[in-house]
Image 1 (spheres, rainbow, N blue to C red):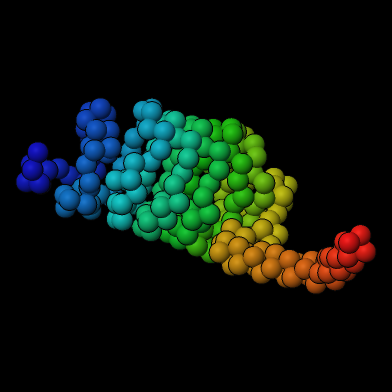
Image 2: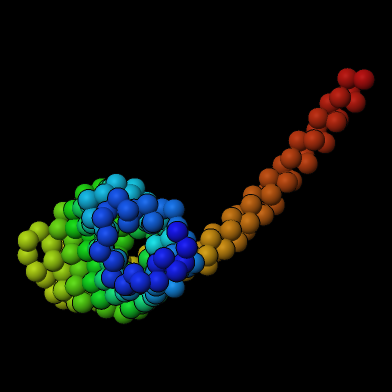
Length: 223
C-alpha cells in the first residue's frame, strides 16, 4: 500500500481492530503524513503486551488510550509524546512506570486503575498538576508528591490533593530527586563508591605491605 492510499484517512481512526493492530506493529507512521499527525488513538481489549514503537513516535498525539491491552512494561520513550494530555493505561499488568513518564508536562488526565501489580512513586509531571488521576485498585503507590493530581479517584471515592496525606506516604526530596535526576544520582553514587574504595585502600595498604615484608623475612630465615 502506497502513501497515497493513506492520504484520505482522518486523524481520529476508526478501523477494524485487527487491521489497526497490523498497522501499529508493521508500519512506520512517520512515513504517512496523516498518521504522523494523529492526535487521538484508542485501542482496548487487544493483547499488545508492549506499546509499539510506531505509537511512541507520534509526536502530535494528545490522547492515548490503551486500556485492557495486557501491557506489562511502559518504555522510557513514552516521553517522546510531549503533547500528550490524556493517558489511559487502565486494566493492564504494568508493574512499574519509567522515570521518563514524569516528563509529560502537558498531561491533564492519568488513568492507572486496575493495575494491581503496579509498584510506583508518583511525582509532579513536568512540575505541573494533573487535573484527574484514576488509581482504583492500585495498591502499591510507594510515595506521592503533593500537587501531582488535582483530583484523585480511588476505591470508588473522590479525593483532593489536600487529602493525599491520608492516602499515601509523601515522597521525600531525595525520592523525588532520584526520579527526576537519575543520572545525577548515579554520578553521586559512583563518586561515593570511589571515595570509599580509596579509603579502604589507604587503610588496608599498610597492613598488606607489612604482611608482605614479614613473609619475605620468614622465607629468608628458612633459607
